[in-house]
Image 1 (cartoon, one colour):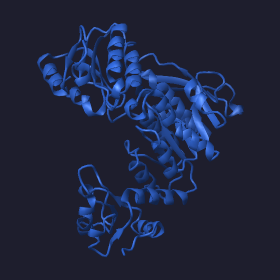
Image 2 (cartoon, rainbow, N blue to C red):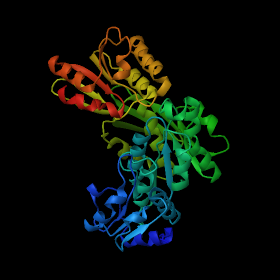
Image 3 (cartoon, one colour):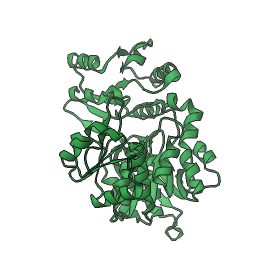
Image 4 (cartoon, rainbow, N blue to C red):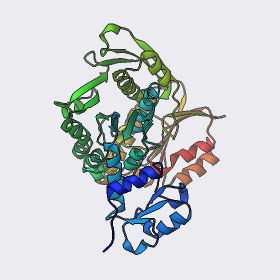
Amino acid sequence: MHNFISITNLYSLFLKTNQSICTDTRNLIPNSIFFALKGTNFDANEFAENAINLGCAYSIVDNPNYLNHPNIFLVENVLIALQELANYHRKQLTIPVLAITGSNGKTTSKELIYCVLSKKYKTHATFGNLNNHIGVPLTLLGINNTHQFAIIEMGANHQGEIELLCKIAEPSFGLITNIGKAHLEGFGGIEGVKKGKSELYKYIKSKNGKIFINGDDPVLISLAIDIEKISYGLKQTNNIIGINNTKSEMVSLTFRSEIEKNEKNQTTAINTNIIGTYNFINCLAAVCVGKHFMINDELIKQALENYFPNNNRSQLIKTQNNTIILDAYNANPNSIKVALENFSQYKNQNHLILLGDMFELGIYSKDEHQKVLNLLNELNFSEAILVGEEFYKLDVGPFIKFKTTNECKDYLINNKKSDYIVLIKGSRGMRMETLQEIL
């Protein structure tokens, strides 16, 4: 009979190691707890003893055959143990926890909200996009007793995933950026996406929490019945009322708050370094969260004006030859649509569009890629290069197509482009950002 370690004893080890967790022996953290997670092609149980030899304090395994060191402990399932430990840790916290999900813009919204809240509170937020069933527990376990606020990004490509992440993170506040055509294959169509993303609202409602909501979005409003909400948008009925003043590449806005009645009609102007008018609503969401948590207008303005995007998201890059809008972190039908519509507003410049395939669309893939092609024609773009197996299957008319990103790269090396404004967008797996190097 093997001795399993309880979650309370595991939590004691967690505190003893100064809250250090490690899941990869290639990026070892000395004096941490190594969780031997299973991947599709590996079983980290095999590395448990090696992790200790390399400096970890303890290892957690779910295969008794690897209990060959006094500091290796057994659990039923390593992943579930990690999630339960994260939830146990969450239950010790008394700080506000805001969960963010959505089809588009959740990482940008998280970054903007983090910048605003950090002006007043020591804030912990999801690093990068560690937003899945492993990333969310790791984010939670990174919260320590100096933090005053936590922002947890939640990603999902199947129904039930947000519900699971909510049970682990127990958010007290929620924000869904929008609901669109992302991960249609896993969710089973747009209604499935709606159902999956709204699991956050359901959880917040069950806990009598509050949501921050785009009050102009009829889909979100229809899903948010009987939940306490703080709203933002263009309409005068919202708690935070914004005006989109974007005239050039960078988002510019003014806002006024109905939350503080003593500041009636006072407006604050913000000129950001974020491109794409579609980011206006993400900026307004950050304003809304900031105002709710009593951050003054000047600090909100400073936070948003000093934010510079990175990670291939809405980045404006000026090279010797061209101006590049790099938005190649990911792509789905909604995000490509708003990116193209936004791009069409840049007048008096030579436009070049480099679009990569959209992934995880399943049976909807051909239809959705054709819609992108139709939109390129509707918006009267003359130069576009379409990259990937899905686009390659279509008759792209006047545009150029390649099966792979490397083929596209070779073409651009041999056909130099200069004095263009270039939009680069595509799903993560297409690695479209590699094209900027030769532009």
